[in-house]
Length: 205
Ligand SMILES: Nc1ncnc2c1ncn2[C@@H]1O[C@H](COP(=O)(O)OP(=O)(O)OP(=O)(O)O)[C@@H](O)[C@H]1O
Image 1: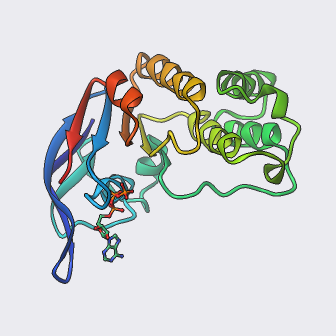
Image 2 (image 1 turned 180 degrees about the vertical axis):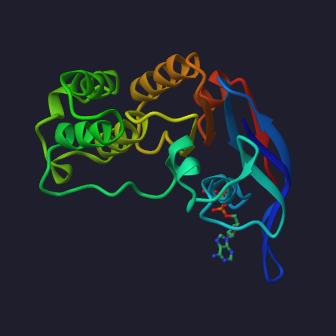
């Protein structure tokens, strides 16, 4: 489903991503590991299509990753760059809005959004505004906005950011359930629990 073939990024004489090759199949959860500065975010950006490769290739469903192409944007959900949020809408309203933009505005869509909110432990905070939650709760909100939409591939950059062990377990169980429906996950992480839960990982650096 997603494949890197000798994918590399250099800027002048700086190596952002050394040549990297791997393939993630539908329904697989892969982690990208490696020390700080080893190129994990850069790799996710190349699959997102926001960072150009200097050699090799990164493809989604056999096509080069290109954020300008609607089929690519439809296939790929991501929490790599900060997710834009509205200050004047509650968390629940925003998750429903994203779900409705993909599934249409219906009671079933609201139920779908509520389920993601509940699975990420945010039910009691649904009526709050983004500036009224903690850093970890804000991270869960960003994950809810990312996971509520359909996607063939989900790219996550350090999804464990600000989360405690209980919330990391919640995230793992949501990923595990979603991958069983065929969605592929690629997560850059420093979190051992995520690496333990994944099907395979690629180590950079
Ligand atoms: N715009 C840039 N110009 C030059 N070098 C850059 C630029 N952006 C990133 N780098 C360098 O590219 C390398 C890879 O950065 P990247 O953010 O992909 O690493 P990372 O593995 O995600 O790190 P971390 O674990 O700290 O998040 C780093 O050495 C970084 O300093």
